[in-house]
Length: 275
Image 1 (cartoon, one colour):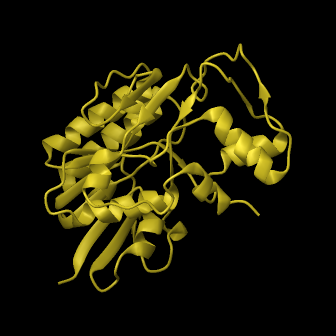
Image 2 (cartoon, rainbow, N blue to C red):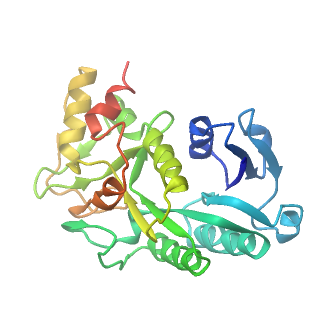
């Protein structure tokens, strides 16, 4: 029997997921304010998650709903609107047998190189993590699950490559700045996997299998591009991208559930992005 999937805030990951799903099994609907940007084959729904009236035409019952809306800017107001208000509006309108909220490892506040997993304390220092936790709790109250993606890279998400090419890249050698990432194709594969699990856990960390110091990744990219390696800056000031030592995200729960990464480490993923 054909199943109906609603992707709320359907963007790049939603399109990648659509291309993975069996069209004989899934009928995919994509909700966004400008649905003309959706790939052909996704049934478009023109609606605004912040406008409850625009959601009235949505079917109240789905086999699965994936919520992957993103804020238009990096501000507390924009994050709350996208992740809390939008989710609340959608859940007041529709229900599903499988609800998946796309979250982030920003919910963790650890910044001294610690390993974190689904059982680790979530005490984020930034508003982004606190708001995501609020949305995760709302999801669980409605019987859903959250997937915490680490830093997503892939086609159109090539910040590190561009920083090396432009000469802007820099890093601190010691103590190491740990980085975690996941390729966008693996993100789509994770969502596909979570749609099919018979008894999923309430939360999954989704990050590749090799957390890596930032300097190592930048050096590898520079070598592959035949460019100078980034300069070391021992006094590098903390900022949202280059914090203290960062954390290391464990993916054992996801892997134990049967998931296999196409890009299990940074070199395999970035190699496909380089000329």
